[in-house]
Image (cartoon, rainbow, N blue to C red):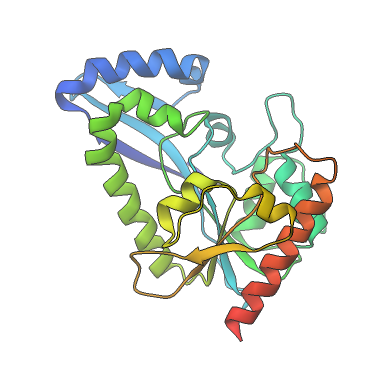
Length: 255
C-alpha cells in the first residue's frame, strides 16, 4: 500500500446484507478493483482503501489543504489523487494549478506513482506546500453515493462523526494554515458561514471564504470553482483569477 493509500474498516452489524446489496448496485464495476472494497461476511464488515497525502518533508512554505469530498475509486486504485482518467487523460486539476502558478513540476510526469512521490516530497514550484485530503473516506464516484449505500442512519451515526473527527485532528496536527475546497457541500460542512449561491460571486471575482468550525486554531477556508465546472466561456481565466485572489488573501492572513 502506498503512502497515499490507507485502509479503513466499517463494522456493519445488522445492516450488513442491505448495505452490501446497495453497494453492488451503486458501485458496479468499481468493486472489481482488487482490494479496493471488500465485504467480509465472517464478521459483517467492509474493508476499503482510501487516500490522503501529507508531505513527508517541510519546505518552509505555508501549508495548505486541498479539501475534496471523497475519493474516486479510480484514483484510489491508481494510488494517487487526481490521477489520469480511465482514458489516460490528465485530470484538469493539474492544468488549473499550473495556470494559477500554484503547482508546477519541473519534470514530465510519467504516471501516478511519480506524481505521488513528487507531491509527498513537495517537489514542485509554487507558493505553498499542499496536503491533499478527502473529508469522507469511502470511495465512490459521487459523494451522494455514500449515503445511498450506507443509508441515512448509518451515515449520520457512524460515518459522519468519524470523518468529522478525523478532519479536525488532521487540521490541528498537520500544521496547515488555510483550506481550499472546490465543493460547496464540503465548504458548508466544515465552515462557520455556509453559502447558498456562489458561482456568480466567483465570476465577479468575489472571495468566498469563512473559518473552519470546531477546531482550536483559526484556519481560513476558501471556496473556488469545482474542477469539473465548464459552464462559462472564460472558465480557464476565471479559475486562475479565483486562485490568485485566494493566494493574495492567504498571504494577507499570514502577515
